[in-house]
Length: 363
Image (cartoon, rainbow, N blue to C red):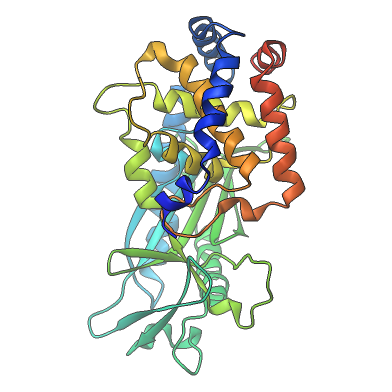
């Protein structure tokens, strides 16, 4: 079943959406809500130009200029290029420019072939290397690349060595770096030295393969079933496709899409809202939402689209189905227990149907 079929498989959606909107717009004026959202954005959402500039400087001076430079010079496995992904580079970071994501694309030398072998788990594959001397330490007897071993034994070790060689660089010369594993990434934390060290930036470096226009990362397998040899599973990454959609979505009409998603990302994390949705879930839902025809994305439509998007989220939670943006037959809400999803649906419904609750989360 493809993405469109999944979305159309719930015929009650249209009725629910229309009924919800009829209730909502008798409760609160969309123009008034737009003003409240803009005020909320100024107070809680926007990041300063100073912290954005600092993040870019730290990435350039310490990550690109020293960590990656050391890795290029001291590894048999070559780095082809870097791809900058995630909220910071999509224009969707909120509150502070304190995180960055970089895909480290590994080079496959001439004569070496990487073959993609589909698994029975959507989104996960095995990668088989042929004539690949540089990957020899990380291959099974059948030639499959061990994702866990490559990430930990090679990349984590290499980045840790690079961290020990880092030299201070002005204007942020009083810093220290820590290295740790984080999902598919090796995370480099940059701290400002002091009595109580202040974290300035966390950078996720993700070793990745590009094979015939698709990208694969060593993201640990998550599933409800036990899988033997799961260390040989690689997760297909759609970060670059997502960046292409999200980074440019306001370019043609100078609309309010970025502003809206930044606000919603902040709202769901507030204690009075407390929805355990991360950026990945919200971006997935939002990419579906902006595909709808006939939406007004002018600056004055911020309030109306805030209602519209939260209503869409509520529908996804109530139906316990949020289709993956790029993969057929994948429900990204499978990450949650059913009771948690129902609680989120109920919480969103109460917020959408109460001006008091809505105002509370925007205080």
